[in-house]
Length: 313
Ligand SMILES: Nc1nc2c(ncn2[C@@H]2O[C@H](COP(=O)(O)OP(=O)(O)OP(=O)(O)O)[C@@H](O)[C@H]2O)c(=O)[nH]1
Ligand SMILES: [Mg+2]
Image (cartoon, rainbow, N blue to C red; front, side):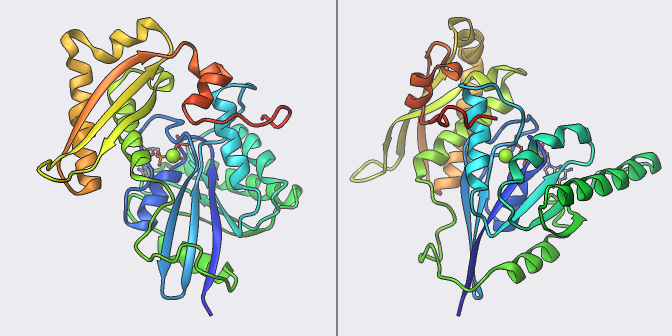
């Protein structure tokens, strides 16, 4: 019999969730940037091995969000991922402030699924006082989990960047998987999302990497058309729109003489070509969708469905 189950990867923004998923799968399923709140929607990563299948759910970072906007949508994505996982990987960046974990603990509490608590980025050097602080952090978090009745399987440090601790993590996780079916019978499939989603994400990743502090959070990417090569057409032809919230942001994304958008387009196209394993044309336009991050209708248009009232963080 094969084993299978779902693992929700949760934690604060920037904890290293998407990096860990990509390292475990050996493929770049989720976008990663140094900015917090990069991941905006749940993404599945599927690991199929001889013994069975683990379906990972990468989630947006959990934080205190105002009702009715994109941040509430993001936190709800994490909440839904926690509805019935087999196991939870709870990631904590040791350098973040312990008080911010309260929001994560609150969301974890109702699930009651067993948790593996992981302190990430173990490759980052620490001095003695930081090491001592981390030990206290670990003790406190274990206590907080116990207080909330959340079963803890194990707690240790990992580095997704250097593959440290990942073998142990996977071995422990397989142990916890019950007998079950392959949810995704195609062994080659590594995610549940269509190519269009990944293409939009590659553009979003470059917006995070090329634009100043707050601007990427005002951007949403919509794929208007996606034509696969065929006949005498050798390129995959993609037309995408970058939606910003205000007129003044349009110029900032385009840049002087169109320089900024050119850089973004070139970098995104390179990533897309790597992903689809073939040449691509990427056409980018910038449009204003007024206050889309705060407007239910506009959010819906971008594919971000808000939680029902009263379910917000
Ligand atoms: N040094 C080091 N940096 C890491 C490691 N894992 C992740 N990072 C960095 O931490 C930053 C955030 O990583 P992400 O994987 O995007 O974090 P996340 O938890 O998915 O963040 P959100 O999607 O914003 O919630 C990036 O700059 C990563 O390169 C690690 O093992 N070591
Ligand atoms: Mg992420």
